[in-house]
Length: 110
Image (cartoon, rainbow, N blue to C red; front, side):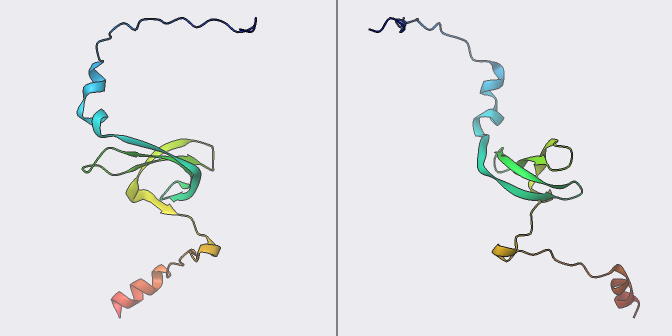
């Protein structure tokens, strides 16, 4: 054995009582998935950012996207219904132009 290597010792593990939060229903069905590479997203009413992870609490809950925002660098957990893919010309996903508000009013009035 080289002189710089330390001998390994076996340490007996003591039984530990489970913490109450580890046995809750939510912790048994939650899935946390790290995204590699991060996905560029647009968050409604907050701007653009990169999704670095997805949290799934199960069937009764929305997916939560963990998004690092471009402006300010804040990290938010965003519900699935507020997340949109960013435009990507090479994938054929372009920004949709919204019709002006006046045309909607004219169509209703006329």
